[in-house]
Image (cartoon, rainbow, N blue to C red):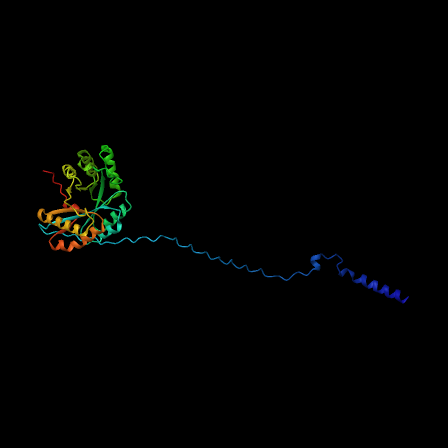
Length: 303
């Protein structure tokens, strides 16, 4: 009986206080404690990846170009014998040709078209204050091939002029022209008229007759057309021998003393270079004045 009474008391008390307690079911989120707020992670900036510098391009070692100081202008005294030295066949043996450029005298290099160093030696000679000419290949009597860019007697007038124009275009520094070989072509009046006509279209050019034939009409044809011209007096090196070339230089000096001037033609041979080097002091002591080939041309028509 006492147990029943106690149970009744407990039940009545629970009913009196029950409205203050919620009976709805709790959600999972309510049962699980909320996690503590975590501050947003700081994202570090990406570490830059080093960019390798490109390897420098490998450039083949260039052969240094010699620097030659331009020659001072010298005015020879009145009546002083003048000598012009022309080095033919240039553009093929550049080391020897540079040896001529290094000489402390006026000298003229005549450059062939279509050879390995055509443009190089022409530019270097011009920069050094030396004379530059086109060495124009022309047909020979013997049939020997004078090389690329040649003028022949079989060409038409138009072909000759076109060939001369093409050869001159390779040596824009040229202030004049002389014939390379040409014992047949230089003796042909028609051919020489065509050559001179082509030269006259290129401004103030001059012509030096190399006189590879006693029958050459080059100088007289140029002068008749009003083109400054002259002709060779001495070949320096028909033999590749220093003593022989020295004797030829003395012969050129003798002609210069007798007539007032002389033109000597040599080639880029080591023996010729050695002979010229050795003879410069002797010739200058003898009163010879070295000049460029253009200085010995004249515009006077032939008599």
